[in-house]
Amino acid sequence: MAEITYDEAKIGDVLAQLNVAKEQINGVTADLKRAITKISTARGGKYLNLDNLYNGLTLEEYAKNLVDEIIGNINAKIEAIKQYNAKVASYNFGERLFGTFLHVSKSLVYNFVGGLETLLDGFLSVTGWVIGLFNSDAKESIGKFVARDLTEEHYGANSNPIMQRGIQASFFKQNGLVDTVVGVVGSMTAYIISTAGIGA
Image 1 (tube, helix red, strand yellow):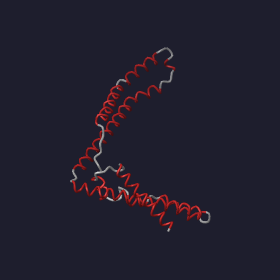
Image 2 (cartoon, rainbow, N blue to C red):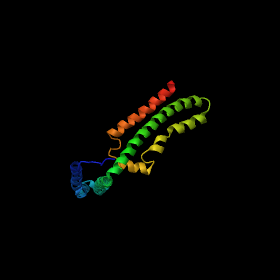
Image 3 (cartoon, rainbow, N blue to C red):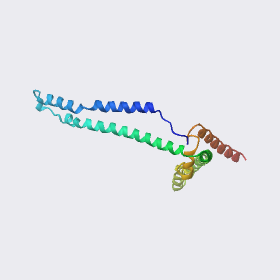
Image 4 (cartoon, rainbow, N blue to C red):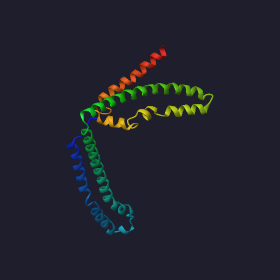
């Protein structure tokens, strides 16, 4: 797959804004403590239930941890992208060409088989409904079969390590324009063949 791109400037702006937010959180606890003290020492303050205000004293630390977690997740994603791009860049031209061939072939076969499975599932769903009038167990079995995604199980990107490597080395993006066009061709071919078979 082609290298993953991202806007470093926008990511930098987001991280900067998160750090500003974290700075703005500082001092919230101290301000709240002062407010609680004023309320509790005011006339009649001792009769007030300030439990919820005291519970708020933990919010500053919670908010800081939440912001830190978001920043950490963003940085982790950026590092993962950099490592992925470095791996893609390490493939030579021959490996990338072969990977592109595997990628296009996988997309064509995947969508062709997926198209056939969709047609089969539609037929079995109608058949299962009819059979269900007489045999509920058979209807349930057909329903379970239809619910499975056999195409993904056998031809998905994660079904074969070699295919995973091929997609990674490909010149084209997964789910990109070329992938989509090839997928449409695969699906259309399945429908054309099925229609021709039914009409024969």
